[in-house]
Image (cartoon, rainbow, N blue to C red; front, side, top):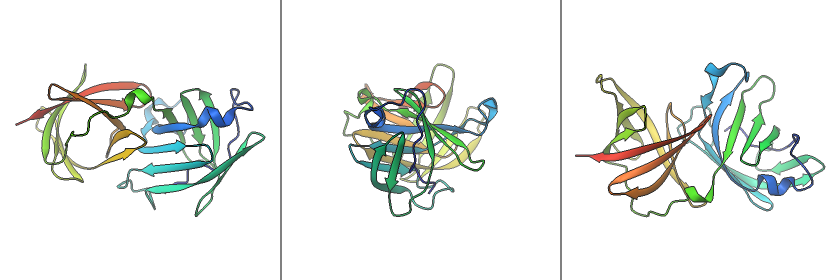
Length: 216
């Protein structure tokens, strides 16, 4: 697993209250090598929580880049630098863009990863939303497809032209958030079910609102 953080170098918003600026839960939205190359904003599938002196990270367990899907440890802040201690410490640079967005900068030519802060309004308030073994129509304003969650790790994605694609998926609950990771897709927060429709909030360069409607 690509390590989360050891050293944090602040951007222009970083101050003596920097610990407060990063406390909370963040989700990896996308990565990029060169910010001017818009074609390479790749989706990321990782969630990170910073507490008073601890951090926890969970990555999509089927991500081929991951040696381990969980990382946790302690951190401390001192003079613009955050030091993280885990089983295998490593180094990264983090730039706070705004209260709700930050970038972990890759070293030695690696991609930069943008994280979005998860609002408490996205925390799950539904306890009985099931996906495994069910088939759903996924829709947004300008998009639709069908997701067949065959079991707890395999889904089949279908389009109107009868194209099908088998993908791995994982659902994880963390710090009150119900999170859906899928191969070749952005991360989603599963929201409250209303009249048989499940709400998905996708995080990438912008926020996407989508619905899942169960099919027979």
